[in-house]
Image (tube, rainbow, N blue to C red; front, side, top):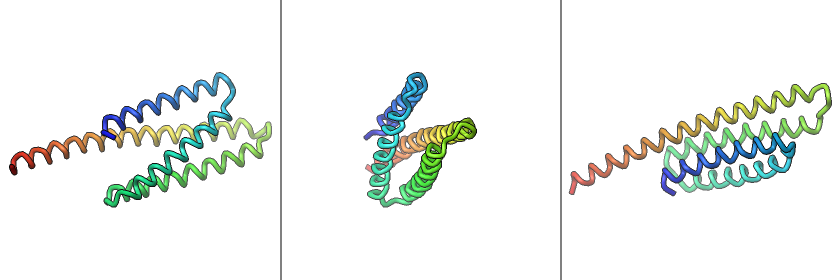
Length: 140
């Protein structure tokens, strides 16, 4: 997939996440959306892990490590949220909701940073390709 296509897909996924969030808020049917999002996220993580495993460069190693750390954090958050849902009581519901919102806010901040990093990496790739083409043309 071309880098521009990957960036367009990332943008579309961000918009889709926003739309699903708003729909879940207005319909009070967040559970099915959470289940769908969890499944999609797990599939995407597996695909990313497979892709990183197939690539043997140092860069992919760093991304694989970052992805593994992020996956660990997400699993911890999910475990906490699952336990929270099981232990839900009226007195603690507000605090737990705020904690879940804070977790979501941090995940969004991380994703925003990842988007900015992806933009930077894509632009660096364009520069590297231009340089490689210049050197190849000069060597002919």
